[in-house]
Image (cartoon, rainbow, N blue to C red; front, side, top):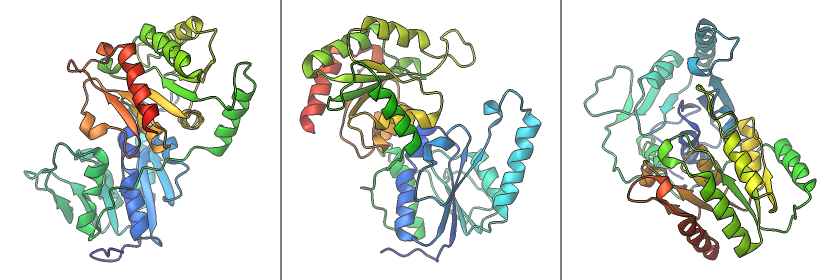
Length: 352
């Protein structure tokens, strides 16, 4: 077992980014747990992505603060900032040996959090041109652009004298109660058969370049059912498409469900992140665009067909899981035809 420069008893990992970023941090945390089995390993995240990792056995305690943009309707910014300060002061009393700012992108916001926590050391990826007081361990931003985000996180470990194990997966875990609820829901569906191949399809994407049309999804579902006599679980971002603040895909989902009403397609209305994770865990394989759902499926060990638009596929492909990745030269998902997606899924299925 590798040994660190000095023994660590209390470790705080800080990751304030999105769902996929957080999941790509899990191989780092798993490596830390492998090398420090008795250490207290805590994680500081935000309330938006907190449910992603609430079942992780490698983490002792997950702490979450609310970003101002994620505050509840009855919360003021002042309340959010005050609660954050109280949390950071609570963490300060833990007397951490080290705070690790995980991720390939250096964040001044994360650094401010770490400084208040006041661990003995702060470890981060720091641009070579920066001169930052209070960081005892840092490395220049000289990463190979072809590295995966998980590898960016793992690149911090040599600073602790640890030889990273790059084969460790994200190993995400779903909420057992939510899984039981979804299994009960499926058992009640007239066309559902437990022995059938179950394909999950997530139809939503935050970035316009990652979005596939409802017509294409309908076509692909029909092609796959003809090929495999399979059943489908349909996922989407909840909400009205005309909502200016949080647009969703309710109308798109309903149009797809109406068009394939004669096929075994089951809608999963996931209003909480833990429901989405548990729903994906009920699938055998998964189809989606690059995004949080893709990384959830990879963390749950689901073979994937994924569509990439204008994003870095080398940095964000599904980590340590069998997958087929389609990214057209135009960097627009709309240029992937249902025929191309069908062929790629056949390749995925044949590789298992």
